[in-house]
Length: 159
Image (cartoon, rainbow, N blue to C red; front, side, top):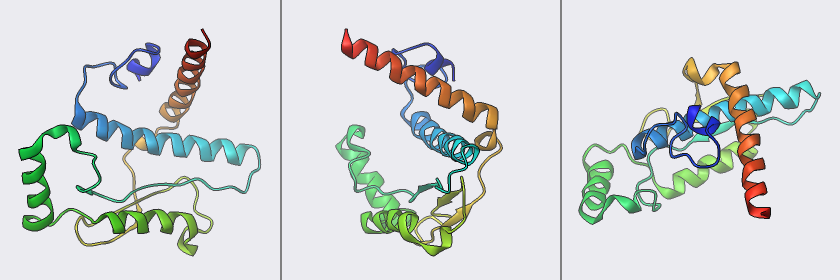
């Protein structure tokens, strides 16, 4: 969290230089940490609101890889979708979001992570997260640093 702790001008959460692959992975970790901390805070206030997070899997046709360059993008898309078959469709990704919003399977679930557990197979279920993603202290720190980053951004905007 050194990057976030440094203030408004940072490239990576850990304070390192830009790395697109690590940034993507860090974003997933932060998503889980933030979700778990929000759920904890909701429960502390006695709220019945639930908060969960998800990843629909690798979806190559959304523009996420637009900065990778033409040949790489074309080759990666073809291989992921047609050779190793680990990519999912945009439609499946949308269905995952709908599931998170309205599925009875999430009734009573709090602070959990759902994912495409078998890439390319259109599976979507609750999955166990890493020990790091379960770190309540790290989740609390991310929340606090996020609050500080928002305050700094608003202050900068108002100046």
